[in-house]
Image 1 (tube, rainbow, N blue to C red):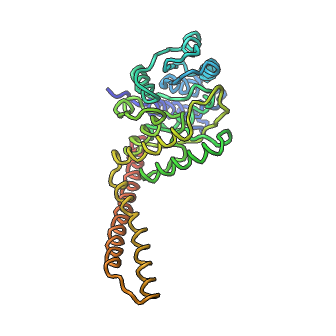
Image 2: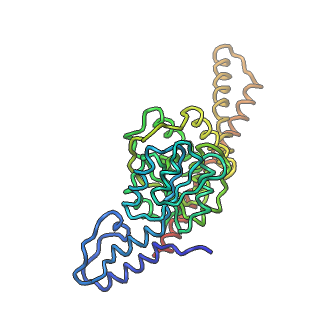
Image 3: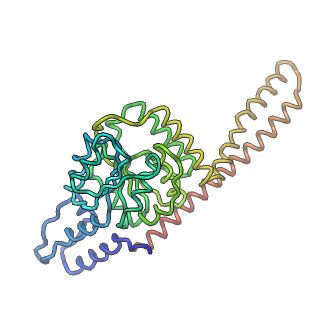
Length: 348
């Protein structure tokens, strides 16, 4: 059974409480996660505190770990300090006492089944009891103070990515992440600047319906692909801090795996745009062939009829494919606008 979205419930509560208080309210219902509101002089109940508490209890913070003993205690303490008490550490069988440290800090500890991050995500979803789950890496790079930014959009989107600032990302990884994100945006007809971010929020019931099959560090892009196909993907900016401990990502091996997975996922979830886009590349050899034919005719007076026909056929096929790709993008944009209108009317 699908649980009601607590944002809609508490937003209605906020509207009712505001109607009893003549003082105008300019703060959104979720800003209380970030700003400590002063108690009202007219009401004995602090509505901002109530709403903040409801939202924080509706989110389970999932921390996937593998040998993060240097950072895990600090990460747990920071999350708890922000008022999030539903914390689950999903350990991939660490060998450096990460699991023991997590268990000693009073959070729920489970060991993942499956391989890579996909296994950790699937395991976490089995244990989550709240309407939403918030994934964040256990290496200290993400700030729990930013969780409210993602939760703030749960009544419009079922998947919200925390797009990292680039201050603490080196140039090589910055370039690779930008390339992957632009490719993903092109293949799925959406706009995402950081599809590989390790901080993201999911609506639990919807996430359980997703298929996660790719190994390694591909879980984030596999989740994003399925959410983008549903027009349920959004992102908000978050801070990104220096990593505590040793990096596990292999730049070239994992980068190639993610790029390969992007094409596989596009073939699975958006085949029309992928096929038409690839077929549109026929325009390039077509133009080169026709240019060569024209040049030979101007230089030597020889008309290469066979090559001219081949170039013309390739040009027609490529042009038609590009037209189909454009129509697919327009359809995706129309679906996205329609989905946004439906969400807006549903919330209001």
